Image (cartoon, rainbow, N blue to C red):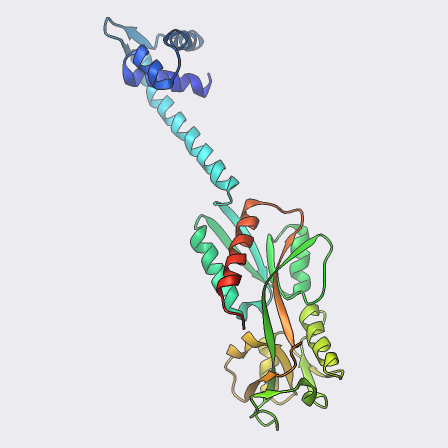
Length: 300
């Protein structure tokens, strides 16, 4: 018994007339009659009483009509679910992000826009180090990851830049330059730097070191900090100075000053990483929205 047989049967039962049912279905009356007869032979029951004005369901026909409508509804629902999934409108999306990425306003705007556009998607967020996010991405445990790639590229990973922001110097308020609005990065050449270990955030670490070298010096490595919020707190405790993405200046910690850096090359990029081979509709939809949001959110 095929779904088309059930559709034919329901149409005849609802119309009470084979000719009208055939017109509704867009097929000829003789083929429709033959299909109904074939269904009756398959089920070994009579489904309709033939009358002078048309047909009416038998008791067997009435019983089949209830289940046939349910099965057809289920089939339509299943088809719609498959189509929505095929368009990336249902299911789960696993998004990873580094701690430094969470501070950027584009991340909040992106997540909000995606959830509004695709409410049928369960969005799962995972915060971790860049190295761990790339490992999860490679293993297929993440669909996308928000990270700061620096100048790095990664085998099998596509990087989609969504933002670029200046970096700021973060200084203890007791520092001689803390009251300045803007300083050259070279002015910090003799200070100890509080840095995130390279193993935890290799890209951001390398961007900071690179910015210093382009300013003419190698940073003096002082106390290490596990994450950016810790960097700010350690600077407040006068362990040294540091450089952070401008969006991190929203951390309101006592005893620190965020100062603009005059060097134009003191910038960091934010990108979405995806597996090159992953062309799922969910990923494509997220990247499409990210592109739009990146044009709408003001550059920092």
